[in-house]
Length: 260
Image 1: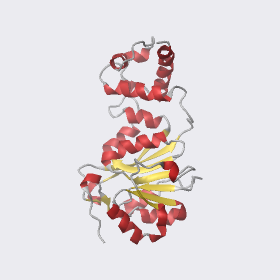
Image 2: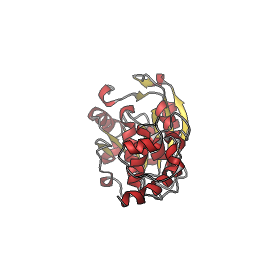
Image 3: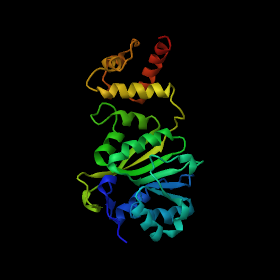
């Protein structure tokens, strides 16, 4: 049975077994979190190595029914641990009540949405290893004062250490994507919760980067922040601020909003 890659699902099936083996071994071997979930296993190239390593603690979720049918035949031992569903729509608590690690070759067109879901469930997901578009990987791992640094860089780095592991060429996929790929690892840091209002933190970061060529003061005013504190942060551009700087800025803004 052959599975045809579907453009509308952003499928590019990995064919290189050495790359698949390298990705599967990029999860921390010393982790005490035993459950592992693969997102978008496709034809199971990565799945075979994960099954060997994690056995009954390994789960896979796939939205493509043709791939699901293929995987049921190729890996019958998965049983109910092969989940036919969309990860973005999945109620994670239906599957996991305890922490689990996430791995996969993520569809480029929804990778950002997947990362936002990871952040929403950060207390359940201590580690992520994934292959994504190289440009996105560089953005997520970038530091302040770089052009790549942006909203998702700040959001992820607030709770995870982001490490760019290695680059993957186009030729190892079917069909080959038009861009290079990269594998990154996210490792949960010690921040149990931000030392500020997290909802306001998200709003401030998004508002600041939505007009990144402007000073933060002008961007926040455009976003409806009418009263702002006296701080040097407001005269800077968003890419100049690290996570802790944004946290401090939010702590200065919050009492002013409460008084409005």
